[in-house]
Image (cartoon, rainbow, N blue to C red; front, side):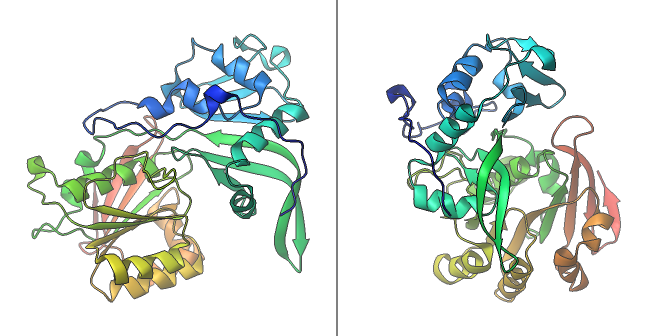
Length: 349
């Protein structure tokens, strides 16, 4: 992928730091999601604006959107904020208009640690920052024989801020565990920004560490973190606590990583995020033959919608999933709407 721009050095105080050890019992946003950890990736002008927006609590912000020639926008779970040059909430017509230089400086800082690897990742339309923050990218697509080769004239970035919220798994785990303590094959469904990755992280941690309150013993969990969002790995160090018995294969396609973990790490559970590619389905079916439990997520607003997706339809046809958890944003991200028991053919909350 060919990217042409002038490099702007990242300010010294913005060089990514080694993740600090966290209290695993902390039930709130950790240090990695403070403003400094987020704003250091942006160009000077936008960074300055964000650092002045102190009245807006980071825990309320899910996305930061910068589009060339459009107002700077922060998107929360229940409210959106357009920011003016002083970092104050303003109507769109008075908000700061993002300049091309703002976007290019931001993109340069996000990719300078490993430009070649970033270019390959960008071909899929996103980057992943340390801490698991995903950056969506849009621009002009360059195709070759129907295949995407590169993106040029980048016009917009969407920084999705990852939040670690522990404790959500306790609500659903009792319905996902067999009498012998093993996990039912489970699929978590939700539309975008409805908390499926957050719930998946917490489930992985509880399954790995065990939970005495639920009389749940710890199990070995293998995580294929293709997009780098689940563990938030940075130079081999996870930013999120996924449990003491968890092994993470970072940046590896699911179709390859699932079989690698099964062969090399002997997991009891394989956990993956966002099933969707036909080759993902094939890898899951192969893993089932080894006796591991599957814990995964996919984009859909309901079980019926998921069963109509061609890539998932095969898994439902073969009766792979025994439990399906459906999330929504009805009462905020992570609202559990339904837990389907596909073997008993009934639903519950």
